[in-house]
Length: 184
Image (cartoon, rainbow, N blue to C red; front, side, top):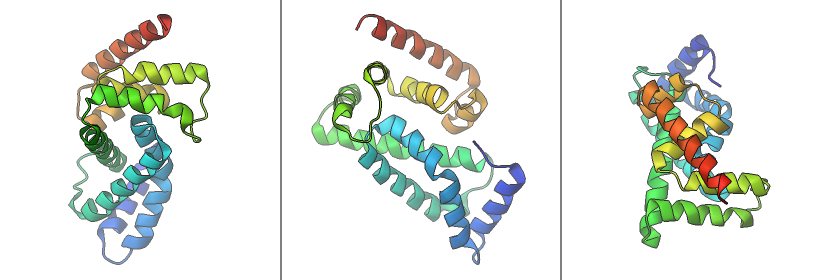
């Protein structure tokens, strides 16, 4: 998923310089647009909403790239921004409809069948419904591990949580999903 360390350092240097920033930013977008799209899409579900969130992510990255200190990997920082932007988007949407996060999750999944960009079958729809019943943090951990196949170490950097806590969270999420699917 991540680019080679030296390549990432060169890209970051270009992004933080004044002369190559636009070309470097175009490269950053082409490298990370697809994985970030799916990261956001796993959280917000809807294609159009994902595009909106992703646009905000890249605007935020562009505005803040010079402040990035390199204390974590560049892609971890990008994923953290994408995660936070997705949560902000979902919270705003829940407030707009005056409903809870969990009600919003279920409503979003109910609308998946009508989403022309959703290519899943009945089993995948059931899985999405099961995921929607999980608390937000467990949803994130499950999506990152199951769909994006991120390692716990990478998830730990992105979510700023210990690997042990993430493993426990994933285990709990899978148990709840199994129970949900078994009884539906």
